[in-house]
Length: 544
Image 1 (cartoon, rainbow, N blue to C red):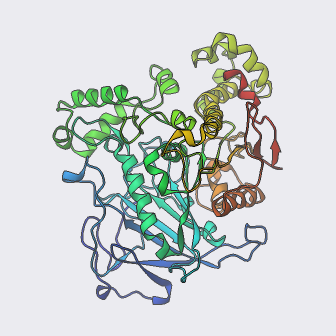
Image 2 (image 1 turned 180 degrees about the horizontal axis):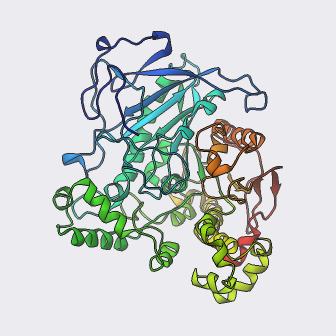
């Protein structure tokens, strides 16, 4: 996808054009809002209302989209490996009518979500979707706000996906913001004389932009929920465990959250190895001398997934992601949560049943001749847990070696981690006020933790794979590229139900089912029909 500025708008990296330079065909189609850095022009679009939706068919009829609003200066030149710098004010009115440049380049081919790349330098921007693009009247509260952080393994992904359009949340009274951030080595790689966790700093500056500006778009800066999927889910859990981020949000919704918590020694070793491969010093000047394309090439080669690297990835995750640097991220996220950090912030988290089963889908026929025990041991199954795990997952094992291998991989990388978060939150609640100044938020009371499973099987794959819950969350089953992920005619009733629960959580801090407690937590199981199930993750038990 190429990026062509709208009539009269600024080209990437240049000064915005003024309103006098534009001649919109239909002024009634456009709407303008004043941010602290300058005025922006968005466009009205209709919403899709149904009697079965979260607003009972009575929600907002239209939604205004403001695309590509810069929250930071372009991270190029001297700013390439620096902490993000807030965007300087611009003159006139900035057309926010098209998606701005993305940090993702080309098509990495790693996700079933349509996430287009947009070329250009000004990659740090937000997209705002709102049903009411004006500040609330004096004494009135604004609308609740959802801020979405995209996934992609911390090296790919884009906020420009049509699936992330906030029009359905707008219809139901929620202002929606999607944010961009630096990816891969530029965002998370260790460099001797550069600030660490540059991508995390991008998240925080974008959330600060929301705090400073969202009331102008009709939102309430005191009711901000951060949400994300996969690496984006890991991002919001990382932020939940950071004392310095607590003032930026008031609820967390993590879909298939993949925590990184990269050890500092591993991060430094990766950075030094990349520099050695490139023949440069591991400094800003050294890496800055390399074209972006060369860094991406080296990064891709160093992180390529193969038989030799699979075990390391399963055990330790990817080497690029939020790093426990002892400064911005003081300690691993689970330790922070167990110490009480974020205990006053409500949390919803969950996963699909078969996150990574599609990794074995192409080899399913060949794998049927491979003994299940042999492949599971190869993937890291401890010998003493093999038989209990196969018994607990007998229904999946009966479907073949590929299916049980995929379930085990999903459990190791996602589903066991969910239960550890629940345990850490309970420990954090017990820690209470003794956790210190960084533990609380607006209240010293411990907030709820809600768990879910997304179990509805895709009409394409026959199981609930990675990313499948995203279009249900956004209520966008009529969006593009849906059949490859979900198959024909995915159940709208399930999208209505799941999306309504998300709206309820963003609006009131409760999705509508019992909270998760103890070693056998209750969870909502999203399926047809959906239901609440005690000990919903029992099949993971042998791995704990």
